[in-house]
Length: 417
Image 1 (cartoon, rainbow, N blue to C red):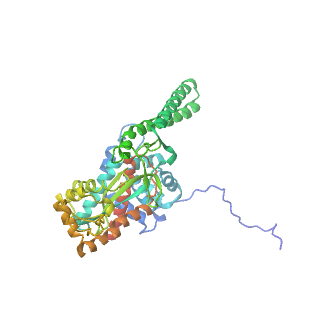
Image 2: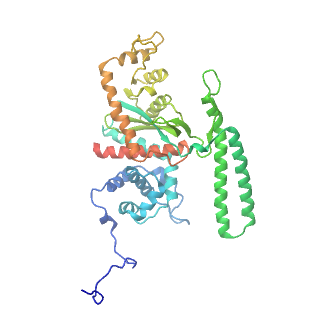
């Protein structure tokens, strides 16, 4: 049958249409995004509001409500999204992110700065949210578990240079800055000036990172010294992220990374403390984390579960002074005929108690909770995007880790409630 003379309605996808839109009806009841918003509305964000300079009756652009930015990052985190650019894109294409925004359109720069520069604010939010759960007897902190993980840093292996290489990079960077400044002064075109100004900012930023990398070298050299005081190899520092260090990863390879530790309540699986540093070993983490819990909540756990890589005799003594008993495996002695839990003449009272404790069935049973608690928190962090830091410096990385802890506790609150 011929169709040339038939009249039909064909799709026209290029025609612009004005359509009525009810954002609230686009998101179903019970959607997790609504629960995230309810959580954010209960959180004290006064620290963020205090930083806003725009006030009624004065000139200037209105600031984006911190509730929107906080909700976007929390919802993005539980969906495994750690990129500010990706969240900004979803605010234009995904109904749930648009529901959070409610017509406000934050750019990726605003989103990135909100997360990267809010370490103190996130730290206080973590304390407040856990304290609320403690008031409801949902978190006890009687027994906690500690575990760490190496997270790939935002630096490539090729960005590490020796002192001589860094000094050469510094001279090149200085020359680039001077050349760009002169080029900016000569060229009067507005478009070209904006482009050159951006290039100049990038060159200055690189020059500053090189200076920071040189400043990190003495500390790196000190770590590389062996027991006899000689350096094992020449110290190198990264021009991309000067605070990153090459560490042995879980797969046995060596890559630039940072060390992230969480302390989790075994009963509720709520994260109570977060720490990030650039030490390749976990032995320096226990005491700072214990001090952090005491400072946050004015309480010391009764039992502290940790793996053998975190154990130090000085750490056991320090926690014992706080009334905390360490439950961790005893390292096998060099002399195979000696029992690992046998008390040594040089042991302090706290270390002797630890060795005796680890020979009991109670301690062996209690230690089994560590894997189901601390390693679970680490697994959730990786599932929510903590496979590689997209930010540079320890402070910004700690902001990311704190945000992950808050998101974890938010989800735990939903389950506990």
